[in-house]
Length: 247
Image 1 (cartoon, rainbow, N blue to C red):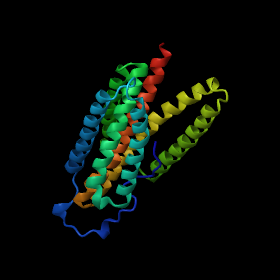
Image 2: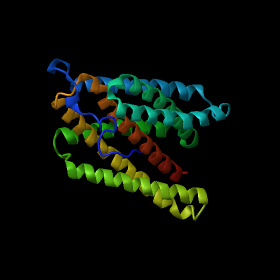
Image 3: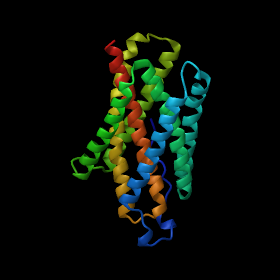
Image 4: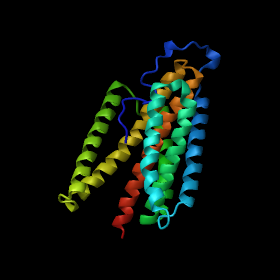
Protein backbone atom coordinates (compact mmCIF):
# COMPACT_ATOMS: atom_id res chain seq x y z
CA UNK A 1 0.00 0.00 0.00
CA UNK A 2 1.02 3.61 -0.26
CA UNK A 3 0.25 6.86 1.51
CA UNK A 4 -0.65 9.76 -0.66
CA UNK A 5 -3.29 12.36 -1.41
CA UNK A 6 -2.18 12.59 -5.02
CA UNK A 7 0.49 11.20 -7.30
CA UNK A 8 3.59 10.80 -5.07
CA UNK A 9 5.93 11.64 -7.93
CA UNK A 10 4.30 15.01 -8.49
CA UNK A 11 3.58 16.63 -5.15
CA UNK A 12 6.44 19.11 -5.29
CA UNK A 13 6.18 19.91 -8.99
CA UNK A 14 5.44 23.53 -9.73
CA UNK A 15 4.58 23.83 -13.39
CA UNK A 16 5.46 27.53 -13.46
CA UNK A 17 9.07 26.63 -12.64
CA UNK A 18 9.53 25.16 -16.12
CA UNK A 19 10.07 27.06 -19.32
CA UNK A 20 8.22 25.28 -22.10
CA UNK A 21 5.95 25.84 -25.08
CA UNK A 22 2.77 24.08 -26.13
CA UNK A 23 4.60 21.94 -28.69
CA UNK A 24 6.49 20.25 -25.87
CA UNK A 25 3.56 19.68 -23.56
CA UNK A 26 2.53 16.35 -22.09
CA UNK A 27 -0.18 14.44 -23.93
CA UNK A 28 -2.53 11.61 -23.04
CA UNK A 29 -0.97 9.47 -25.78
CA UNK A 30 2.50 10.13 -24.33
CA UNK A 31 1.42 9.13 -20.83
CA UNK A 32 -0.33 6.01 -22.16
CA UNK A 33 2.73 5.01 -24.20
CA UNK A 34 5.12 5.43 -21.27
CA UNK A 35 2.72 3.54 -18.99
CA UNK A 36 2.75 0.70 -21.50
CA UNK A 37 6.56 0.76 -21.61
CA UNK A 38 6.83 0.53 -17.81
CA UNK A 39 4.24 -2.26 -17.62
CA UNK A 40 6.07 -4.08 -20.40
CA UNK A 41 9.38 -3.90 -18.53
CA UNK A 42 7.67 -5.13 -15.36
CA UNK A 43 6.07 -8.03 -17.24
CA UNK A 44 9.32 -9.12 -18.92
CA UNK A 45 11.34 -8.98 -15.69
CA UNK A 46 8.56 -10.72 -13.76
CA UNK A 47 8.37 -13.56 -16.28
CA UNK A 48 12.16 -13.93 -16.33
CA UNK A 49 12.46 -14.04 -12.54
CA UNK A 50 9.55 -16.46 -12.17
CA UNK A 51 11.16 -18.92 -14.58
CA UNK A 52 14.71 -18.42 -13.31
CA UNK A 53 14.31 -18.91 -9.57
CA UNK A 54 13.11 -22.10 -7.92
CA UNK A 55 11.86 -22.28 -4.34
CA UNK A 56 13.58 -25.60 -3.86
CA UNK A 57 16.98 -24.38 -5.08
CA UNK A 58 17.18 -20.59 -4.72
CA UNK A 59 15.39 -19.81 -1.47
CA UNK A 60 18.14 -17.51 -0.19
CA UNK A 61 18.20 -15.45 -3.39
CA UNK A 62 14.42 -15.30 -3.48
CA UNK A 63 14.19 -13.97 0.07
CA UNK A 64 16.90 -11.42 -0.70
CA UNK A 65 15.03 -10.31 -3.81
CA UNK A 66 11.74 -10.00 -1.94
CA UNK A 67 13.43 -7.68 0.56
CA UNK A 68 15.75 -5.66 -1.68
CA UNK A 69 13.54 -5.18 -4.75
CA UNK A 70 10.70 -3.27 -3.03
CA UNK A 71 13.23 -1.09 -1.20
CA UNK A 72 14.83 -0.14 -4.52
CA UNK A 73 11.38 0.50 -6.00
CA UNK A 74 10.41 2.78 -3.10
CA UNK A 75 13.67 4.71 -3.42
CA UNK A 76 13.02 5.17 -7.15
CA UNK A 77 9.55 6.56 -6.42
CA UNK A 78 10.94 8.96 -3.80
CA UNK A 79 13.61 10.24 -6.19
CA UNK A 80 10.99 10.71 -8.91
CA UNK A 81 8.88 12.50 -6.34
CA UNK A 82 11.69 14.99 -5.70
CA UNK A 83 13.47 15.07 -9.07
CA UNK A 84 10.80 14.55 -11.77
CA UNK A 85 13.20 15.88 -14.43
CA UNK A 86 15.15 12.59 -14.23
CA UNK A 87 12.03 10.42 -14.10
CA UNK A 88 12.95 8.70 -17.37
CA UNK A 89 15.74 6.93 -15.45
CA UNK A 90 14.09 6.43 -12.06
CA UNK A 91 10.87 5.05 -13.50
CA UNK A 92 12.76 2.40 -15.45
CA UNK A 93 14.71 1.46 -12.31
CA UNK A 94 11.35 1.19 -10.52
CA UNK A 95 9.94 -1.04 -13.26
CA UNK A 96 12.93 -3.41 -13.12
CA UNK A 97 12.84 -3.67 -9.32
CA UNK A 98 9.05 -4.06 -9.23
CA UNK A 99 9.16 -6.64 -11.99
CA UNK A 100 11.61 -8.72 -9.96
CA UNK A 101 9.44 -8.43 -6.86
CA UNK A 102 6.21 -9.28 -8.68
CA UNK A 103 7.82 -12.24 -10.41
CA UNK A 104 9.03 -13.68 -7.11
CA UNK A 105 5.85 -12.98 -5.15
CA UNK A 106 3.68 -14.35 -7.97
CA UNK A 107 5.79 -17.51 -8.08
CA UNK A 108 5.36 -17.91 -4.33
CA UNK A 109 1.57 -17.52 -4.51
CA UNK A 110 1.39 -19.89 -7.48
CA UNK A 111 3.49 -22.43 -5.57
CA UNK A 112 1.22 -22.17 -2.53
CA UNK A 113 -2.23 -21.82 -4.11
CA UNK A 114 -1.95 -22.76 -7.78
CA UNK A 115 -0.96 -20.84 -10.88
CA UNK A 116 -4.53 -19.94 -11.79
CA UNK A 117 -4.70 -17.26 -9.09
CA UNK A 118 -1.91 -15.33 -10.85
CA UNK A 119 -3.88 -15.38 -14.10
CA UNK A 120 -7.04 -14.34 -12.28
CA UNK A 121 -5.21 -11.48 -10.56
CA UNK A 122 -3.81 -10.24 -13.89
CA UNK A 123 -7.20 -10.38 -15.59
CA UNK A 124 -8.84 -8.75 -12.57
CA UNK A 125 -6.27 -5.94 -12.52
CA UNK A 126 -6.83 -4.93 -16.12
CA UNK A 127 -10.57 -5.40 -15.68
CA UNK A 128 -10.50 -2.94 -12.79
CA UNK A 129 -8.36 -0.56 -14.84
CA UNK A 130 -10.86 -0.62 -17.71
CA UNK A 131 -13.81 -0.25 -15.36
CA UNK A 132 -12.36 2.70 -13.46
CA UNK A 133 -11.38 4.41 -16.72
CA UNK A 134 -14.97 4.04 -17.91
CA UNK A 135 -16.35 5.47 -14.65
CA UNK A 136 -13.96 8.42 -14.79
CA UNK A 137 -14.35 9.21 -18.50
CA UNK A 138 -18.15 9.13 -18.31
CA UNK A 139 -18.20 11.30 -15.19
CA UNK A 140 -20.17 8.73 -13.19
CA UNK A 141 -17.66 9.25 -10.37
CA UNK A 142 -16.08 12.69 -10.09
CA UNK A 143 -12.83 13.33 -8.28
CA UNK A 144 -12.90 16.40 -6.08
CA UNK A 145 -11.23 17.55 -2.86
CA UNK A 146 -13.70 15.57 -0.73
CA UNK A 147 -13.07 12.38 -2.70
CA UNK A 148 -9.31 12.78 -2.34
CA UNK A 149 -9.56 13.40 1.41
CA UNK A 150 -11.86 10.42 1.82
CA UNK A 151 -9.50 8.10 -0.04
CA UNK A 152 -6.50 9.36 1.89
CA UNK A 153 -8.35 8.81 5.19
CA UNK A 154 -9.32 5.28 4.18
CA UNK A 155 -5.72 4.56 3.23
CA UNK A 156 -4.50 5.75 6.63
CA UNK A 157 -7.09 3.51 8.25
CA UNK A 158 -5.89 0.53 6.21
CA UNK A 159 -2.31 1.26 7.16
CA UNK A 160 -3.05 1.27 10.89
CA UNK A 161 -5.28 -1.81 10.58
CA UNK A 162 -2.52 -3.66 8.76
CA UNK A 163 -0.01 -2.61 11.40
CA UNK A 164 -2.24 -3.89 14.19
CA UNK A 165 -2.75 -7.17 12.34
CA UNK A 166 1.00 -7.53 11.81
CA UNK A 167 1.70 -7.02 15.52
CA UNK A 168 -0.96 -9.56 16.46
CA UNK A 169 0.45 -12.06 13.95
CA UNK A 170 4.05 -11.89 15.15
CA UNK A 171 2.99 -12.04 18.80
CA UNK A 172 0.67 -14.98 18.18
CA UNK A 173 -2.25 -13.37 20.03
CA UNK A 174 -5.44 -15.20 19.03
CA UNK A 175 -4.31 -15.53 15.43
CA UNK A 176 -7.23 -17.64 14.30
CA UNK A 177 -9.83 -15.21 15.60
CA UNK A 178 -8.34 -12.41 13.52
CA UNK A 179 -8.58 -14.25 10.21
CA UNK A 180 -11.86 -12.55 9.33
CA UNK A 181 -10.26 -9.21 10.18
CA UNK A 182 -7.48 -9.97 7.71
CA UNK A 183 -9.99 -10.91 5.01
CA UNK A 184 -11.88 -7.65 5.58
CA UNK A 185 -8.66 -5.63 5.26
CA UNK A 186 -7.81 -7.34 1.96
CA UNK A 187 -11.29 -6.74 0.52
CA UNK A 188 -11.25 -3.08 1.54
CA UNK A 189 -7.72 -2.73 0.16
CA UNK A 190 -8.91 -3.99 -3.22
CA UNK A 191 -11.70 -1.40 -3.23
CA UNK A 192 -9.51 1.49 -2.08
CA UNK A 193 -6.68 0.69 -4.50
CA UNK A 194 -9.20 0.52 -7.35
CA UNK A 195 -10.67 3.91 -6.45
CA UNK A 196 -7.19 5.42 -6.31
CA UNK A 197 -7.05 4.89 -10.06
CA UNK A 198 -9.63 7.66 -10.34
CA UNK A 199 -7.27 10.02 -8.53
CA UNK A 200 -4.47 9.04 -10.91
CA UNK A 201 -6.68 9.69 -13.93
CA UNK A 202 -7.70 13.05 -12.54
CA UNK A 203 -4.08 13.99 -11.80
CA UNK A 204 -3.08 13.10 -15.36
CA UNK A 205 -6.00 15.12 -16.72
CA UNK A 206 -5.08 18.16 -14.65
CA UNK A 207 -1.44 18.13 -15.72
CA UNK A 208 -2.07 17.41 -19.40
CA UNK A 209 -4.87 19.96 -19.72
CA UNK A 210 -2.72 22.44 -17.80
CA UNK A 211 0.08 22.16 -20.38
CA UNK A 212 2.63 20.38 -18.22
CA UNK A 213 6.03 19.79 -19.89
CA UNK A 214 6.46 16.56 -21.82
CA UNK A 215 9.18 15.28 -19.48
CA UNK A 216 6.54 14.88 -16.77
CA UNK A 217 4.88 12.10 -18.74
CA UNK A 218 7.23 9.59 -17.09
CA UNK A 219 6.30 10.78 -13.59
CA UNK A 220 2.60 10.72 -14.44
CA UNK A 221 2.98 7.20 -15.82
CA UNK A 222 4.80 6.08 -12.70
CA UNK A 223 1.94 7.20 -10.45
CA UNK A 224 -0.51 5.16 -12.53
CA UNK A 225 1.75 2.09 -12.64
CA UNK A 226 2.25 2.16 -8.86
CA UNK A 227 -1.52 1.96 -8.40
CA UNK A 228 -1.88 -0.83 -10.97
CA UNK A 229 0.80 -2.86 -9.17
CA UNK A 230 -0.94 -2.20 -5.86
CA UNK A 231 -4.24 -3.51 -7.26
CA UNK A 232 -2.56 -6.64 -8.62
CA UNK A 233 -0.98 -7.46 -5.26
CA UNK A 234 -4.26 -6.95 -3.41
CA UNK A 235 -6.15 -9.13 -5.90
CA UNK A 236 -3.45 -11.77 -5.58
CA UNK A 237 -3.99 -11.81 -1.82
CA UNK A 238 -7.77 -11.94 -2.25
CA UNK A 239 -7.70 -14.85 -4.69
CA UNK A 240 -5.23 -16.66 -2.42
CA UNK A 241 -7.75 -16.37 0.43
CA UNK A 242 -10.53 -17.74 -1.79
CA UNK A 243 -8.29 -20.59 -2.99
CA UNK A 244 -7.36 -21.46 0.57
CA UNK A 245 -11.01 -21.60 1.62
CA UNK A 246 -11.79 -24.08 -1.17
CA UNK A 247 -9.22 -26.53 0.22
